[in-house]
Image (cartoon, rainbow, N blue to C red; front, side, top):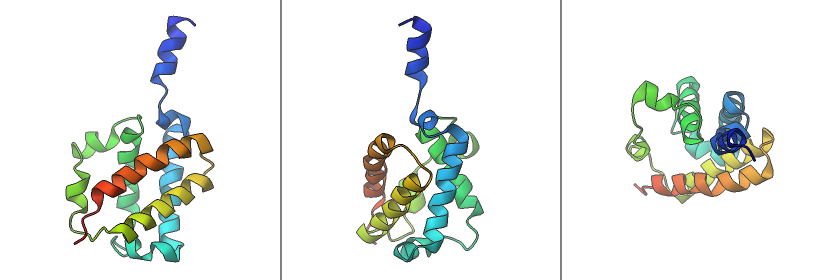
Length: 135
């Protein structure tokens, strides 16, 4: 394998594998569409304002960098402290499960390859576990 091919392979990220900017935007939009319509997600939907435009943009920006793409959130807002941002909300096991339900369904609905879903699911779960605060 040439050095150019090795360098190219090393630079491939989850961001690239799930479709880059378009793929992340689709994932985020589907995630929030599910949150708005799925009865299982009503507790976490209630934590958000009626208009989800800003929160959709924020998650898109955060996931872009988190998945290895452009660090849009950091460029716009500085380094995120997601535990602090979520502290005002009661995030218990039920909320964590609801969030994961929405994300897992969104990943399926936007056709993220199963092998990438299998890698992302435990990573998303660790984030949910970190955010649980049991008010």
